[in-house]
Image (cartoon, rainbow, N blue to C red; front, side, top):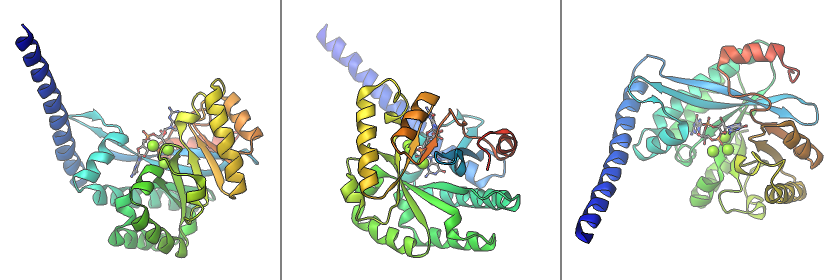
Length: 282
Ligand code: C2E
Ligand code: MG
Ligand code: MG
Ligand code: MG
């Protein structure tokens, strides 16, 4: 009886592994196809960030979306990780850069002054060819690096610190600005960040989503905000879903908020409409 039991456990475990493997394989295959085809499977959406002093839009975070005919909607958290492991991240980021910079130029052409924040993986930060492309895309559109912010996840940075610092310094010298994304999840400290050319941290949404009701989150966020003030860092809170959390963050000196309370991520044309109707417009 026990043998049967352990055998079925084994089978179930193996099936789970096979499922995971198959999912990974189809994501890799489909993503390769999506990158090569012209079928608009990939798209960019933009989520507004609001300056809490002026209550106006100051920036947009560019976020990739993928809708595949076989797999349906695949969340970026899932396929970006797989792209990194499958050697596809350079192609993905190239696609993101082209789209984002062209959309940024479009909005600048309409007279909007907001910056756009792009997410990069650590592999991207170490890829000189890719960074060269970034500079020439900006130049082609007549934009300066200051129009762009680059977000890097805290845990990536901590894992690859020595390599990353050199590249961050080089890019900073060229005029790029960096923000540390998902701050609070990567086991670094603000004192450590002081040695990096970073002026902005984004507090991870896991501390912000229930801020108005969770005392632990309040304590963490309050501490981060007071320390960030000491270190002269700008703080963005992501995942602001209600006005109560926004008010707390404002009281405690947070600089910028982003979240569903302001707006969900929007396609370029939806963003155009939103900008014309929002009380947070420039
Ligand atoms: P992230 O950079 O931390 O982006 C913020 C995520 O929080 C986004 O998820 C956004 O939709 C979500 N979010 C924003 N406000 C709220 C809110 O009020 N409530 C809730 N529940 N969620 C909110 P998304 O778009 O699914 O992206 C997930 C992650 O995938 C990103 O986290 C980023 O790490 C990665 N990612 C997305 N686009 C790109 C890209 O173009 N390149 C790279 N390398 N990574 C990307
Ligand atoms: Mg981000
Ligand atoms: Mg984040
Ligand atoms: Mg994240």
